Structures are given as structure tokens and as C-alpha cells.
Image 1 (cartoon, rainbow, N blue to C red):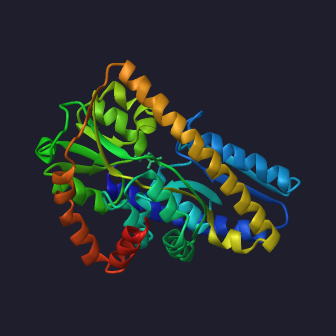
Image 2: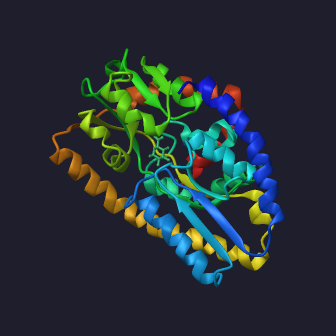
Image 3: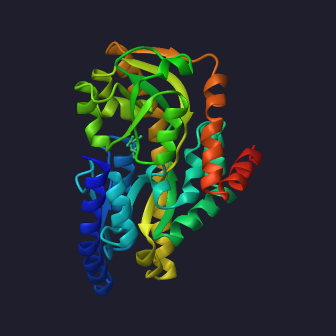
Amino acid sequence: MTQRNSFSRRSAMFAVVGALAFASVASSAQAEWRGWNIHIEGYPNTVAMDSMADMLAEKSGGSITLKMFHAGVLGSQPDAIEQVRLGALEIGNFNLGPMGQVVPETNVVSLPFVFKGMEHMYRVMDGEVGEEIGAAMAAKGLTPLAWYSSGARSFYNSKRPITQPADVEGMKVRVMNNDLFVGMIESLGGNATPMAFSEVFQSIKTGVVDGAENNWPSFESTSHFEVAGFYSLSQHLIIPECVCINTGVFEGLSAEDQKLVKDAARASAEEQRKLWDERAVASRDKVLAAGVKFNEISDKAPFQAAMQAVYEKAYADNPALKPLVEKIQAVD
Ligand code: GTR
């Protein structure tokens, strides 16, 4: 689907969404929420979101129920972000990558190499910067309840191993829906195509794109490894994910229920982070056993240098990002 189609479809949806949002506010006491998740059964996020749903039902004595819809059946991620934002869906597990189009402050976590590693990302998101980003999201209708892990994203493709930026030159690379990622690929000399997650397998298979970038679990769970046999450990992006709730829905809860919902989301995040670490290893083992050619990148400095242009453009588009980056760098 082209961007243009997806946007016009989206505007048509807003009318429906508005009506639904009103309906959901009008109904009361018994909350029956619907939740969006892009991943398949067994994926850490899927298991953790189901746990959250169980906890909510149990701890609220059945007055709050969350029905999870997995595998992106309720639509693409950019559409689902809008649906939760406007209240047509109550809850979603979102990667902060595509959220930059709606909440510009979240772009700070989509800047390549901004985190020193996974533990650094957790410390940042569980601290003051996470609060600040969260407040910006809540102001746009997406209140984060907890942060999930999404590992580190690396490049994979059907053509060749990537060891230096020149290897990306001329390559057609799928990216998540955010102009920042288009700039990231262009800075390496490649051609970026924003595209829904669900379309990537077929697009690599038919040569519409040569490759994409993602963490081990998503590379494996989507079977992308069957059509893109080279995985190069660039680890250029470490982007956290949220469990987000529609701000109006959250603010309409009693203080007691707000705590109950936050506690359930945070407990699910603890579980997700643990499952994540296990799945990352299992997924890597599985794809390597299937014959994927894997390479480390001993010198990432040329990739980092190429990203200067991405930072400069991001700061020019949104000067608020610079102090946020500095705050991230100041976290140990
Ligand atoms: C995954 C992430 C998804 C989605 C996907 C993508 O790692 O968990 O939410 O963003 O990547 O590349 O579209």
C-alpha cells in the first residue's frame, strides 16, 4: 500500500474512530478494553500482553477486561497508534519508532546509536528521560504504562554481508514508518522504503526491497530469514516499546484503578524483558541453524559518523531533541 493510500484510508477511519471514542466514554463502570499487538503467538510481547490481561481481570475482580488482538489483525502499527490515540482502541504495545510521526519527542530514541546498550536504554527509560518522553506521549493521547524491550536492530538482506557503509550503497531497504529512518538509510547511500511490517516478507521475496533491519526475534518470527540470508550485526537502533493506554480512558479511572492498571503493565514488562533475553538467543540459534550467514561489524565508527547527518536534520526539525540527547548521554 502506498503512503498516500494509507493516509487517506486513515482520514476516513477518523470519522468512525470519533464516533467509537464517544461511545466508549459514554459506557461506564464495566470496562471492556481492546488491545493491539503486532506479534504472533509465543512472542515475548504477546505472552506478556496476555499476562497483563489476566492480571487486570483478576486484580479488578472482572470489572476491567482486556481482550488482546495479536498478529496485527486490527491493522498496521501507524493506524493502531492513531486508534489508541483517539480512543477507538484502548491499549496497544507500540514500538516508539513509528510514534515519532505523532509525538516528535519520541524521535530521540530512534536516533541511531543513541543508547550505549540495552541496560543503558532501560536505565534511561525507567528514569527522568522516560518520564519526559512519557509526558509528551500522554499529552498526545498515548499514556505509557510500562516500557518493553525490543533489543537492537541490525541490517539483513538477500544480497551481501554488510561490514561498512559502502555495502549499503544502492540497496533497497525497508524501514518503519518515520522520515527519520528514511534519512538514516539515505545517509548510508541506500534507498529507503517505509512499509508495514506485514508486507516485508513478500517484498523481500519478490525483490521489491533487498532487505530490512530488525532484532533477532522479529527476523526469525516473521520468517524474513528465509528470504534474506545475510544478517550483519550493526545494532544501529535500540528502540524501546510501550504498553500505551488512551489518555482519556486512563484519566477516567479512579486513582485505585490507575494503580492497578500500571502495576499490571509493569509486571508484564518485567516478564517481557526476561522472555526477551531468552528469545533473542533462541531466535539467533534458530536462524543460524537454518543457514543464515551472520557477521559482526568490528568497526562501527564509519556507521556512526554517517549518522551525523541524521542528528543534524533531527535537531533542525525539532530543537527539543538536542537537550534530550544530552540527558541520555549523561545517564551512566
Ligand atoms: C519489531 C517491533 C514491532 C514493529 C516491527 C517493524 O521489532 O516489535 O513493533 O515495529 O519491528 O519493524 O515494523
